[in-house]
Length: 141
Image 1 (cartoon, rainbow, N blue to C red):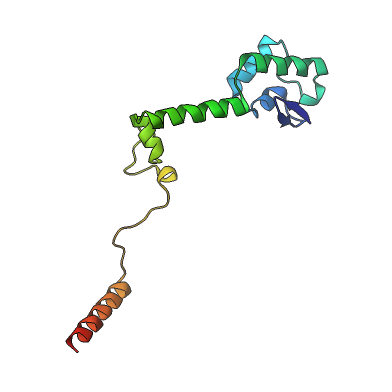
Image 2 (spheres, rainbow, N blue to C red; image 1 turned 180 degrees about the horizontal axis):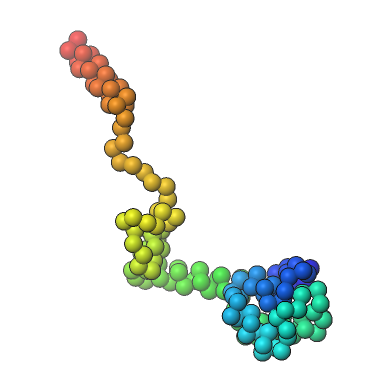
């Protein structure tokens, strides 16, 4: 188990795949890091030397915002959009899709479970009618 940028990467993983476990690094960026440092992407994490691990860590810290810094920056950007009350900020506040997706027939993950309107069954209508009849009778008496 190796720690790169504060993230534990299992020994059996290829380093190219292992770097993608760090928030902010995808496949293209992982490949770019390894080519810039001239490290074979097919090497396993356990086969890396201490020097290679140190080079990777220093390169990532020098060139990219990752993990907590990146999450914080994204959160600040969303807060700024909310404060200036632009369209995207309002959509964030309403917990709706931000980037133009349709909401009439999709967006269930954002909007939540379906809530049917006026979904009374026959039994419910019968109970409501009974209650109304009882109220009328009490008013007459």
